[in-house]
Image 1 (cartoon, rainbow, N blue to C red):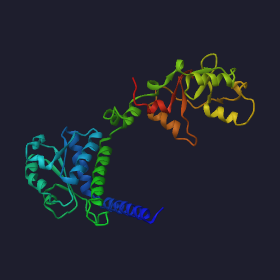
Image 2 (cartoon, rainbow, N blue to C red):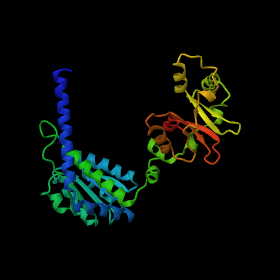
Image 3 (spheres, rainbow, N blue to C red):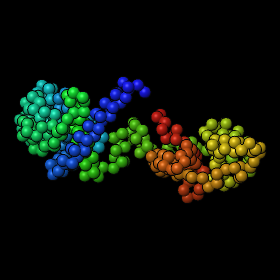
Image 4 (cartoon, helix red, strand yellow):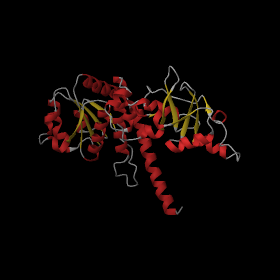
Length: 331
């Protein structure tokens, strides 16, 4: 690695460390005003009012991002551009709405201009500002200190550490409000039905598993060669072994076959009873996809396929793969 590349990496690391330290320092400043802000937002949400984020410039971008974070938690929320506010966008206000203002300087002209009007809407104002002695701080009902000792860039000019602290404070508010409201993962899924997170929370194993007609099913008397042929036909990486009553007794995977063949012995004629994994890990169709994924991955040796059985009879119902959990399109 050349000297120039070393310099690039060192500067990048230095910036990130400055930002991390600034966030740590800000976290240690949290006090009663933070708890008050959480209570105001929670009460507002429970009463059916909305949360309005407002900012300009880089602070506006952070405000917009934070509004989407709160919306993810089911909190009625909207972003108000400070410049557009005086041209009709203030019409979004209803009495009792809560406003969160973001400003590094605490004196953004556009925000200072609309502050009296916002207060006239009986809106509690929470300010996340980088300067406590400022017009916005003085007008706000609650002030959260987002000041930083220095920015992360070499010129100490770019809004790096200050932006990170403002964003972290907003995220901290969201996390605390979620805790105060008792927001659940099921509620989260309701607002994220199209993404992988929502899919994993809303769908169950039974919704996406491969049923018996789509997987290789054999008896323990069949040979490994039979399993290979069955797995070739269905190409899902495993064959399930069942008894005469369709009860799962074992499984053979691609990995099992590779390990057997690596012994350089004649193994294709072996009965499956001698080469299958007996009493394999399995799941029930009722569990959510996220739980199935945890079972498959949260283990010393991860697995990519797992049989699905009826929990009362242990009869085989199907098989689910990691691929099925992550598949985007489903009917």
